[in-house]
Every structure is written in structure tokens, then in C-alpha cells.
Length: 82
Image 1: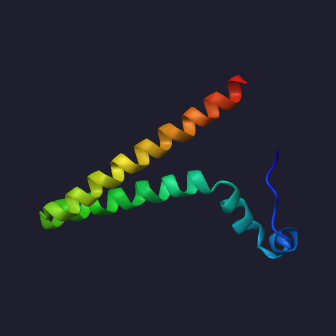
Image 2: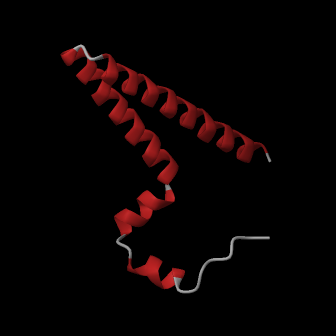
């Protein structure tokens, strides 16, 4: 039982530039890296401004990207074993 693509999806995928298609195929890793960059930015802002709000957002983003990274690694390990 596979994924049923909506009509015309292959035609739309052919129109997408190559760089964007590569990013969409690796969307999970792209989002994890985006969370990492945002967490570093917010933690740096918290150090510069001394704001507890920025520190809390930065720590929340750190928790989010670590959790996402563990989930992706678990999925890859589970896929490699079967």
C-alpha cells in the first residue's frame, strides 16, 4: 500500500528547480539545521541583551532540534536494520 500522488504532481515536480527539489527531498535535515541556526541566534541574542525571553526561546529551539535529530537518527537506524 503505497502513497498515491495527486494528479499532476509529476508535472509540477518537473517544473521545480533542481536545488529546490534536493532541499524538499531532505526536508527533515533542512528543518533540523534551520532550528539549530535559530537556536544559536536566539542564544547569542540572550547573551548580548541579557533577556530571559530570548534565552528561553533559544533553549526551546535547542530541545526541538535535538529531539528532531534523535528521531531522524532512530528512523535511519531502524531502516538500516530491516
